[in-house]
Image (cartoon, rainbow, N blue to C red; front, side):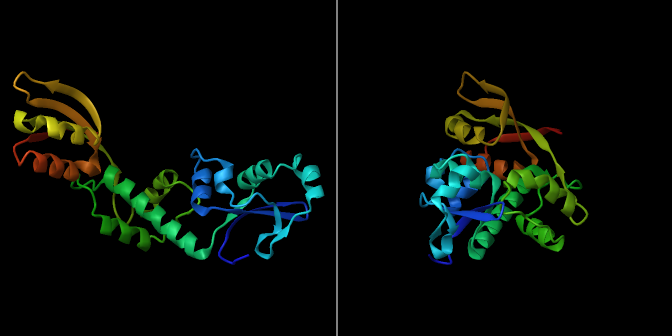
Amino acid sequence: MSDHIHLARLKKGKELFEIVIDADKAVQFIEGKEVSIEDVVQSQHIYQDAKKGLEAAHEHLKPIFGTDDAIEIARLILKEGEIQFTSEYREALRKKKVDKIIGIIHRNGVDPKTNLPHPMERLHSALEHAKVHIDERVAAEQQVHDVVKKINNILPLKFVTKELEVIIPSAYAHKTYGRMKGFGKMKSDNWHNDSSWSGIIEIPGGMETDFYELVNGLCQGNATINVIKVK
């Protein structure tokens, strides 16, 4: 077998058991997403050494795992064992995870002095300067809190939400409303007799600039937006 395969392995006593996995599906499984074991494993074989193509002795499986069903054994290996990604995939996964974490911080966090989001480049730089370790095997959302704590001395951050009062003229209301809703939670939602719209929407603080750009672009600068609460 190729050296460029992805494995999950589990040691039981003195014996090692391996399965060959699809890396992307394995990541989804690790993160708790709905994915079947059949999609994670690339072959329904339990190996002693997958790279050499050496299968585990079939008669050893049931005494050790309580079953000789390859799919059930694969499930146990994935849950209890460790994932062995290739170094290239691990680095690509780590970069993707870093980008997702920074995206979450950018959308939800602001500079306490200005109440505006830090630029993405500044967040990347702070992460590198603080030498923050990003675990490619852990969901981005679960790592955000620790990342913020570690970069806070370099780059002050606070997570805020903002309530915006928005008024949209009738000529733009219908085409803007659907796009605008995806930004946050509607606190009030009012359609008027002249087909104009007004309401209050709560959005992550770091999304304020993006929200202004979207609404003003769709309304050709004719919308009214006011910040009424920061919390």
